[in-house]
Image 1: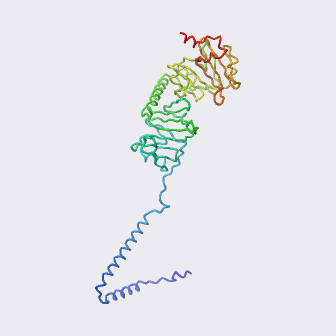
Image 2: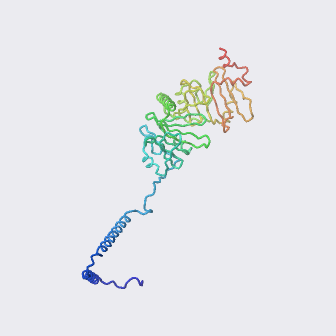
Image 3: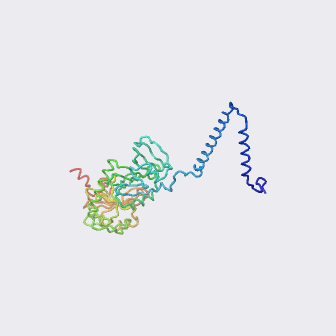
Length: 390
């Protein structure tokens, strides 16, 4: 048995009363000492105040949560390499956040694991930086732009493919893809950083040059869709396109230069992406099929075709069987340059592999004057020379 615990607890009420009476009688019977009375008052006041502070401290301590009990900063399970993209009433959203939102809205969507920074050269008052992976810029306490700096490219490819709203492409050194809202001028841009080759996705208001481009492509796309009489998605294998020549016109998959956008869509598919390019093609716009076929248009007429990753053995058989004018261009052994030319229409087909990855590219166009640099063309009238002479 613990020696500090009594074996029996007695009722001490009467004993406590007796002690209190004795103390009281002693105090009352003591001789009066006026000049020391103030000391008892001071001691009593000090003891009373100490007791009050002790009680107050205990109450506050009981109500205050411990460090372990205090809530931790909000941490949400967000993968910043895979932001969600949506559109609602003309507003574009990245991870449920859109332009004009408040700082609290961003925290609600992504948590508060961020730091506040200010970036040189930026118009933003401040930037909410999430681990260097996502940045939210504010002007006058309203969200003005969003940047995700390392987005999973395969994930974004699927988002772009499945997105039902208006989207377009701009093809140049680094191909850019866009979602655009004609109602709000909001634009989401995805582009590959040249050095690190990481995919950067931004949401902002379109700058004037992008706004003009987007509005033109939106209007063009709407005009094409308004003329469609069928939404059939044809099962076309563009790695093995059909080919024929008829009265000097060269046809690939049933279309030839000079055809309308509607004719191309009817022969191929309604599942295309509209866009523009700045590299080597005189065109107003293009329609792109899964990155493997691009049809360029000038004044609403087909001006050139590019087929990518054509089956080499398949085309070699087509080339061998073709009985019109053709030749194999001279060059390094690893080049695969096959030329078909129609003198009647000045249309030409060039099949070449001296491009990245050695994929077989097929170009259908009106060849430029460089074609006559080939000795095989010496007996073919140079239309460019005739044009310049006139």
